[in-house]
Length: 314
Image (cartoon, one colour):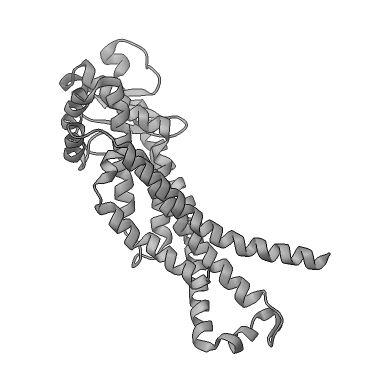
């Protein structure tokens, strides 16, 4: 597989493919498999971009059998200036993507954890659970003296689940159980790490080839997964009531909230058709295919070359 093919594949995996997948409706009935497919697409995009850079580097800089020696200048005579220039441009873009990806990973991780640590300190200070309910704090649960119903979680090593007095007053016991199950599902599955990864991938690629489509779709899918966990605990009706009650609540930066702009879609899903095993199987197979193709295309030539070098040395 050529370097330009790797580059085109990476561009497709960050542009047209996410746009088409985001318009599909089947992920609503197979959220876990759809999330795996999104992760495979993102990983394959990064792998393809790096593969393009490695293939070009090996073509330009590792051959020393012609004019120019190890500097690879002999390739100019073989390929001609237009093709050689295109390879150099693609190699430069690949390096930029790689650097931006590494920087984005650290930047997103540090900024997100800093915001969560600050907000965690605030909710610990403002917690009224001991005053209003006459009991000591129970694990990660914190209650705020806010009239508006709200529920969210702060993921991390020292995680928090935050409810408001308005939520406890408005919701019944089963609704509170459903909303707590929803937030704790986020914490158990570490959905925040998935969002961080997609945020970094979006930041790595230039804006003219990437968009917020993948990130928005993944946000919806992790909410659907948390909804499914809550349904298994409390049932669909209590969860739907809780989601509607918390729909207009503001979500703090770095938190995962039960409400939000996708509430209507999620409530309709709770009353619709169940998850589909057929869609899940197809999505898993697509994820394997998307991830394996660039991996094999990269690994086979390098393994062949390594085998040739080893056989030559002997």
